[in-house]
Amino acid sequence: MILRDRLKKEVAELSDLCTLPATVTRLMEMLGDPDVCIADVVAVVSADQVLASRVLKLANSAFFRRSFPVGTVSDAATYIGLAALRNLTLTVGVMDTLRASESGDFDLSRFWRHSFATALCASRLRALVSTSDIEAYFMAGLLHDVGKVVLANLYPDVVSLALRDGVLESLPFVEAEGRHFEMGHAEVGALLARRWCFPDDLAEVIGNHHGDFFKLSSVGRVVQCADRLAGVYFEREVGPRPELDDKFFEKAGISRLEFEHAHVGELLNNLQTTAVMLGWF
Ligand SMILES: [Fe+2]
Ligand SMILES: [Fe+2]
Image (cartoon, rainbow, N blue to C red; front, side, top):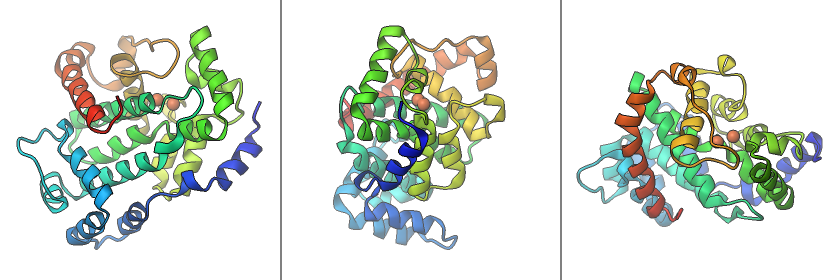
């Protein structure tokens, strides 16, 4: 069993994994400035060519349902909005930072497909009730399981054991990891999010995403539902396919029929095109 204190100390000492690209750190700083202007954000993103080209790819993905392509960061900012551009940049930055973390039985492509599916479901669930803050829901969905990457990076062999337990005994990962780690991926993810200076509410959603639904914030509830939906309809973690009963759909605020008919096909299409574009297949 890997004890909590040891894990905490190791997460605090992580270096590479915890270093986001300078552009992303700069953007996080700009986030805190209420007077930030679109030209400044565009200038920061455009200055990093590699990052900018990946952001443009994502901006042109099916997620944004655009009828014509955007060619520059400035176009992207105009057409998809500053909040979306900022979150895309953070997404790409986080993905790139974690890219080199594949180790043991941990499958990073599968991890990203699951994370992206959760992000798409979370933003779709939010969009059904409100047009505001959709990006925040997307980010929270995308990052909810980020602690798994940290565990896989620090303890590839122990994570491999937990993954095998999950497969052999049909256990959800969160249960299988509990046999080997005193502190699970949710709490570890929250530690990392705090180190990355992500907003407190985002760190909280990450830390509690397997917690009691009724004690969660609205973003937390949506992410917990999206995590299950992503597991059932798109890409799940190891272990059994989650069960969804009528109560679940009641909590999620949608009908099963509506979700399956109106959303699953389109979300799947988004997921596949984006996954191919970003090299997750
Ligand atoms: Fe999780
Ligand atoms: Fe998950």
